[in-house]
Length: 201
Image 1: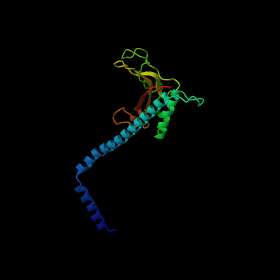
Image 2: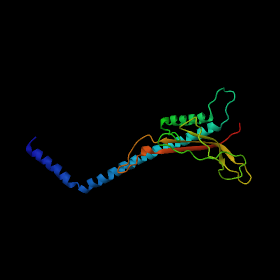
Image 3: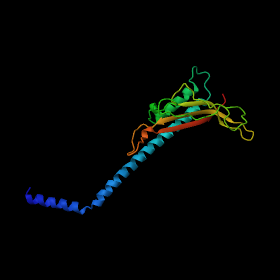
Image 4: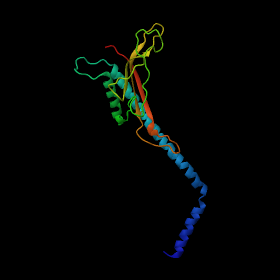
């Protein structure tokens, strides 16, 4: 390669660089990080929505399992709390989420507070809670199963509704810190709760 050819190529490259305005490079430097953050936000929100839907389906199945009549000829059957927990586990497994990310109620940090639901009172004339809120069944730690709770109160002479409430919290499985803040989306607890009317045995 001769010196003239090398010099002419260098001049062509210099001309191309001079023709590109510096403003386009500055604009790209501002726009590309915003586009990147927007795409990450879409992926993050989509995964949170998927976890929320899965947990809602699992707690609904858990509430159904907790109130369904138990087979009397099947021998040893699991408790209503264990049945609800298994239903939540099965829903998470079907969506390929780990059950280890379920956060125990009132346990290690981060902890969450179960809903304050009242004990069911037959023909309760009041439209408010009159007793101590029902605590979670202590046999399972990561799914809160509250049995015999008041779901609705009597209206115009009708009967109130008693049932079961199943709730859980799922910790977002990935850590991503937002720049210049102390926020980390890995600390997000996705909620799930379902209630079901008690069926006749």
